[in-house]
Image (cartoon, rainbow, N blue to C red; front, side, top):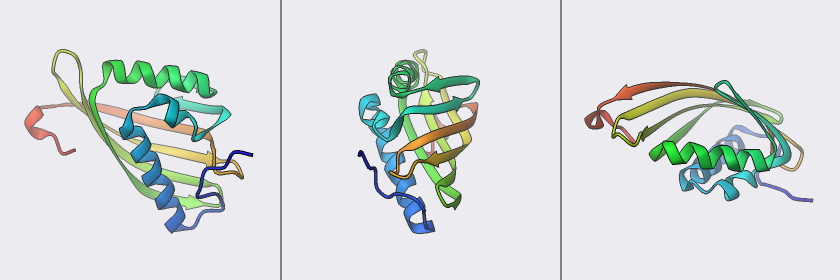
Length: 136
């Protein structure tokens, strides 16, 4: 059986480790690698989109980074309990015409007993910014 450490139940320390691993993976912008952290039937809500399963996750992420150029993400711990972790995040990206954005949001994660994420619910807002206002 496939496992992704750390596995639940999480402590604050292991929840923060899981968050850092996710941040590092997403900053790699490698959809196939990222999808391996999710269950085969993982269910997502990302803004108003619903994505189900690894194949759909890969397609979603490929499309995301075709339009969100120079993407850079920072995640931070909010809370945890048992097999769930709440995360705050911000990321910056630019579109093809050069306009920069900062996205702010919250994610609620639920993991199976093997440490694979089975549910990811993300609420995200984008704010146009000047390139000189970038933080990440």
